[in-house]
Length: 322
Image (cartoon, rainbow, N blue to C red):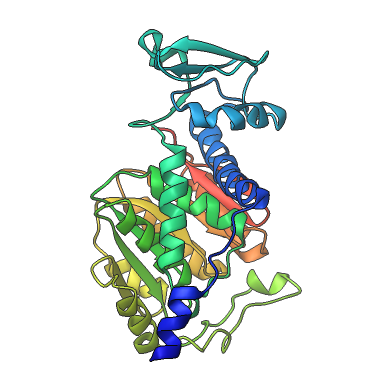
């Protein structure tokens, strides 16, 4: 008892260093890159005309220009009492002169608030226990997926087809909780391993087949969800997704995330999308697998409202302009 109290009173606090600032900036910039990838698809443009109402974002504006996301002469709007920072590539105006119709995207409070998004995602990740976070997605894919979670409307649903141990599910749900969004996530999986591969899947040298990913019993996954206090955000749906999706009756799906690694599961998820009237955002992982890619191509040919966009390696965004 004494040792524990002594440790709490006298332990050294972590020192902040120059790396702390770089680390924070890098995290924010990583999310900004993901947002721009998504917004370029939604706007149908290679480069975006952007306005910034957040002076702290000024340091990133030049980085955005450098990597080609923004056209030059990005506009920064500020309140009269804000500190003015000079830059040859950035035009600064009073916020009273802001005309939203002139820009493809506006960053700042009450708009697309990059700083708030970054802070919220950091908080969400800090609240998730290490042993509850098992995901197959790398940081680039997670950044894109969480960007869409941030952008989709409140009071809607997310359908995840192929959830494995629900690490990604838990992250999306925790972010919704931190953002105070009322979003329900339906996580579909057999929770007892992969179903049998079909002929399109067997065209790949590596085949995801029966018996793989069997270490995810639904009872264990539910314990992880309850441990994180996310029971009201996540509903687990057990069974072969080709069957369970046919019985899923939802009208407010805003995001469909497909990660089945197989032709049949991807096809089932995309057939489910056809039933929805609002054309949700669709993300497909492992999209370079031949079976998965074939299912996507068949869907976009049959349902040409959607266009296929590769955002990062093996990660496709199917988007239907409104």
